[in-house]
Amino acid sequence: MPAPLTLVDTTPELPAAADAVVIGGGIVGVFAAYYLARRGLKVALVEKGLVGAEQSSRNWGWCRQQNRDARELPMSTKSLDLWERFAAETGEDTGFRRCGLFYLSNSDEELSGWARWGEFARSVGVTTHMLSSAEATERGRATGAVWKGGVFSPTDGTADPANAAPAVARAIIKLGGTVHQSCAARGVEIEGGRLSGVVTEHGTIRTKIAILAGGAWASSFCRQLGIRFPQASIRSSILSVSSGAAGLPDALHTSAVSVTRRGDGGYTLAISGRGRIDPTAQQLRFAPQFLPMFARRWRSLAPGGLEGFRSGHESLARWRLDSKTPMERMRILDPAVDEATVALTHARALELLPALKNTGINAAWAGYIDSTPDGVPAIGDTALPGFILAAGFSGHGFGIGPGAGHLIADIVTGNEPIVDPKSYHPDRFKRSAWGKVADF
Image 1 (cartoon, rainbow, N blue to C red):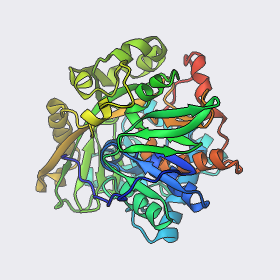
Image 2: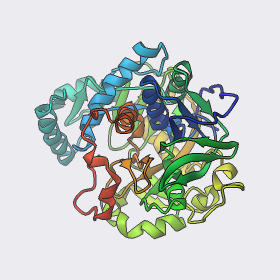
Image 3: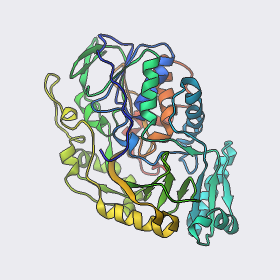
Image 4: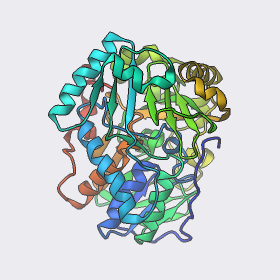
């Protein structure tokens, strides 16, 4: 695995029963388990590979309100507070800090869009500052260029993708929950028309509640239960460079490249939205529902290869509960890096920030970003009583992970929801996404 990741211990024995079982050890799954455990529930988290090993450790680490779609903004705001509160509650370090996020542009259209978003954001209490040409050029002096304008969002920040999910997993264990790695969930058992257990490769856990936070695997898992969940993944490639560049912003976005300071003093480099579409049977099945998304994003996407078929996460196959499943054959999604994108990203970063010439490439990696037809997560109950879906975070899951986990715990326990859950409910996929694709 080229993406850095902190390892955590696995609970030795699988429990015979639990109040709730969370399937998937990414950032959303661990926070859902954490907030359920805080409310006194006996929680078991099962992960087919390693906690945080897929997209939760392969992202930029941004925790932002800036330029969020209106449906996600309330959860983004709540999540920032929860990121801060988590460290105080647990003593665990996710690397979160409100360093502020900085955007630069020479596009009048882009600046106008940011300004419109800023007017909306201020109306709901979000702090964001449009920067004049002089202000943007001064704040962006590390680029050595003159800019038409920019945005600075001082209350936004970053967390450490290598450490965040593992830190939450340790907190779950402190609260009496259990964490089981290399333990794939194969399916569920049903009694009297509702969920009664989660079947794993190491045994069955009796439970009345299961939360599927399976990332790119969620749709194929739902298919086993007769639940239709439209989902498609994009293969995104990014890289990291070593420390040695002084005077750079902590988190900078431009249309050409985005740069984020890592906890080790190095930087993550990426091109926003750029990715490859690896065709799979599942993508072909749901293609009509994704036409609105493709119409909005096609300029950033390119055809891929056979990585999707090799990985097996978007299969239409049915599997048995008493034999090896695709999740056990591919414990961790680690697709091939798009070398052309990595080279372009590095070249653009060196051009944007000359100080990066004092660094060297540490690593490059790819990951699958799972999306819904409208680019907004699916969080809510399903046609199977007791089975809750939390997937399709469309590249936004890391930053809003705490809020999503809290909302899931609210749904399970019947508490007042931290945000209005209506916009996230999976039932909306019964309708077209035309005119509803997220702005991000």
